[in-house]
Length: 126
Image (tube, rainbow, N blue to C red):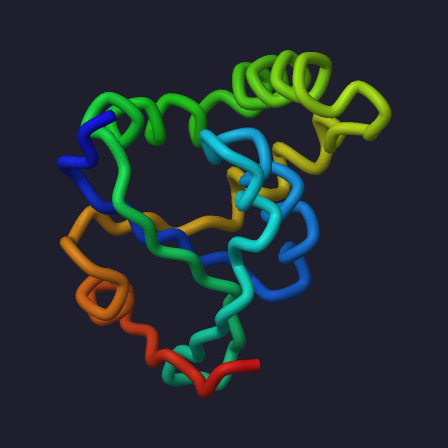
């Protein structure tokens, strides 16, 4: 797999658990749930969970569609959970809708560049 793109995603901190559950499905190994462990803050003091990662350009191109179509996001996640984590409950459609409505996405290369583009400042490690 060739990672020729980069994506940074930020969302309001209360959506962190949903983001981690969704991210589990899009990580090709088992580390997706560990995403969104970092936080950033905007000028008004709002805290966001953030994650940046190299990815394929094919995956990067799908993000806008999945964000605009929460039902498609749910379908993809449910299929992955059924295959890899049949004993776990996937997020709901309401979870996917809240995630899609709340995220900001940058394709700038590198998390710091993406956060800068979004007007966010990375916080210390939590």
